[in-house]
Length: 130
Image: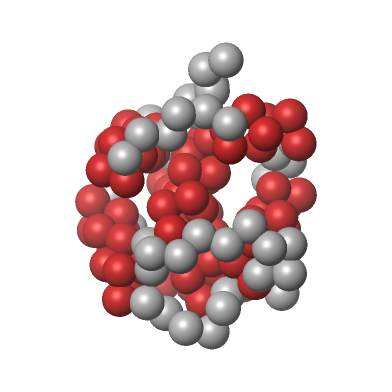
């Protein structure tokens, strides 16, 4: 079954990219990045079926995933882009260790859409965190 490409799937792709940027993807429910993703899913109303469908899809390479995210976010409002970056930031800092590849990915998306990082910081305050 193909996944529906929309803002919520874009958030999942960003999580997937960010959580694997350091070369380690952890499916441990106690992992801070995984727990942050769970908070994101609850807050953004991404249900278990949609998440399961996403995880069990052929997501392609990291470059293909990033292309999909960029296509999805191109259609999103500025506010949605800021929110996506705020979630990326929370995932990036969740484990207390910001890997350079995570930061590079964050900056790449930030610059691609000309997002003001101050807007991201303001929005991040409104999100649940660990």
